[in-house]
Structure formats: C-alpha cells, structure tokens
Length: 469
Image (cartoon, rainbow, N blue to C red):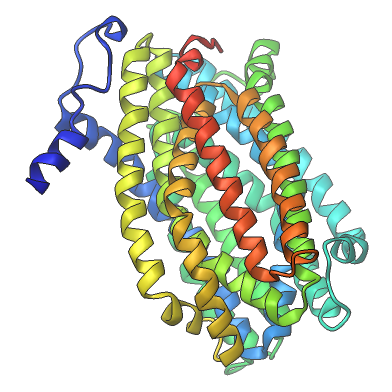
C-alpha cells in the first residue's frame, strides 16, 4: 500500500489539467530522469559550497567560541556585497536557459560574455569598498569588541576572493542555464580539495606553515576560490562547448542582450537587497544576545545550510528546465518539471527532518565541545527540523519562478517576509518576550512558512508561464 501511494504521488499523470497540455508528455521515469541529471550535480555543488563554510567553522571552532563568531559575523556583509552578482546571475541563468530552448547559440554566448564583463566590474568595486570599510561594516553587523580584530582579518582576506568568486558564480550560472551543472560541481570539488588541507595547515601552524588562526582559514578559502574560478574559466576555452570563447561573435554588448538580462536581474536585485538587509538585521539582532548564544546560532545555521543543498540543487534544476521549456514554447512541460521538483523536495525534506530531529546533539557536537552550546544547539535543532518542509519546498518554487523570469513577485515576498517580518519578529521574540535564541528560530520558521505559501500560490495560478524574455 505504501509503495502504491508513493508511485501515485510521484506519477506525472495528474500534474496537468487537460486544457494545459500542448504536446506529448514524458513518462514519469523520463521526467524524473531528466530532472535528476541536472539536479544531482547542482545538489552536490551546493553541498560542497556549504561544506566550505561548515569546515571553516568546525576548524576555527578549536580556537573557541569567539573565533566561531568572528567567522560567522562576516557572512551577511559578504553576501550584501555580492548581492549585485547574485541578481545578475539570476538573469544570466534565466536568459541562457531561454536561448538554449530556442536553440539560439549566438545570443547564449553574448549573454555569458556580457555577464562576465558586468560581474568583473561590479565585484572589483565591491571588494575595494569592503576592504576599505571593513571595520564600520562589521560593527554595523553587530560584531563584538572581543572578536572584532579576528573578524576584520578574516573579512579583509575574503575581499580578495570576491572577484574570483563572482566570476566563478557567473560562469556557472550560464552553464546551469544550458543544463551543464557538472561544471560548477567539479570546480567546487577542486575548491574543497584545496581549502580543507590549507585550513588545517594555516589555522594550526602545521609543518612549515605559520599559525594564522582565523586569518589562515580565510587564506585557505581564497586559494580554493581561485582554483574554482580557473576550472570554470577553462570550460569556456573549449572549442566544443555550447558556451565558448571560440564562438566568433565578439565582446560588444548589445542592447537587446542587456535588456533581457536586466528584465530579470533588476527585480532580482531588489529581492537580493531586501533579503540581505533582512538577513543582516536578523544576524545583528541575534549577535546582541551574547557570544555563546550567537556561536550556537551560527553552528545551527551551518547545519541548516548543509540541508539547504538538496533544495538548492532541485531549485537550479527546476529553474533551468522551466526556462528551457518556456523557450521551446512548452509551458506544459515547465509545469511538469516544476511539480517534479516539488515532489522530490518533499521527499528529501522528510529525510532531513529525521536527521535533524534524531541526530541533533551529534551534529552540534561536531562544531563545539562546549556543553552549554551543545545543549542549547540541540534544542534549537528541533525548530530547524520543523522548518525543513517549508524551507526546501519554497526554495524549489522560487527557483521555478526565477527560471520563468517572475523575479518581481519573488522580490515582493522577500520584502514582506525577509526584510520586515523576520527581523521584527526576531527582535520581539528575543528581547521583549525573552525567548533568546529560540525566538530567532521561531521567527525563521514563520518566514519560511510565509514564503512557501505565497510561492505555492503564485506557481499554482500559472501566470509565470506567460512571461517573455
């Protein structure tokens, strides 16, 4: 009976109403196979990216809770500086997916070249500003004087990473739009293989290497980021690639190419600004609870980010397949693949829920041996477990909408939920109501639930299928 229900749940039949069908539909096996081919490299890549942050936290955790806080406090300022790049890449993946579906190789290559130029200029500017104003940025983010110097050392080195990271992300976004998700997976494997051993050597001062502590973790990240960029760049140097520097179309930026990218990226930028402001305010409020609660919060966020990789991989696959099929004038297939991603997201989130619930104490203990942090973190992970279904599903639904170019709606929900509801509710629950770090995670749960409901409603009404790029 259970197997029968699962088979019916996963079946492609019933995903579409009769009036939505345009042509022949794939079998359930073919639909899930196509989705899997794109999703598993993306999920693996997201896991590797999350591991870099988690390993940094685990390794610097041996230096104490102050070191954990020093590394963690830099995350949101870094992401704010990268907001322009994230929004640009949302446009890149949507446009290249459309051009791939239209079999327009010229415009696909024009899109990636314009993206590279925009990404390089923006990231250089952001890295310089971040380096020069590191101290006021970190103080605004809520850094405590006890670990401010370590945080500044880490942040300044990370600013050297920014241009390499930005270009790597842009190239990978274009390759994802064309369905080449293995490119970013391989680049991040190399990045991890470099980052992990140098973390060990430079944090602790092993063999001939100096003991640099938190700064050593940042240098290891820099080396890994440069390697990832070089791997991604090399894919554009192959003559056989769909996206390649050998395709003779020049580097002149055309107005129609820019307009197509900006149509998606402009709304995505608004979304990124709202999200990053909200995330920064959220982190700053929690940081004011004290070093121990904040270190516990950062550990739990690292664990939550590791679970996010499944949703992120499914989201990237959904975004690419939705965009490609809309480009091929098959909105019915776009709906099929969007719902395929939703069903897989639900299954993965059930698995993650059980891991978080029953393995919570062990997971927190990987990051710290402080008994207070372990007990507090284990309790927080119960709230994290309750939010896994909302989190994973809303990420996939948002990916579908972004792939269709419906970034204005996603931006609006981010404004309401991330920039307003989450930080305001966090402050209310943490301080006036005295729930401390638990209040922050209740607020996060409410935010995820709200975004799931609004994204599901938007996907279900089908307006996103009529957007042209």
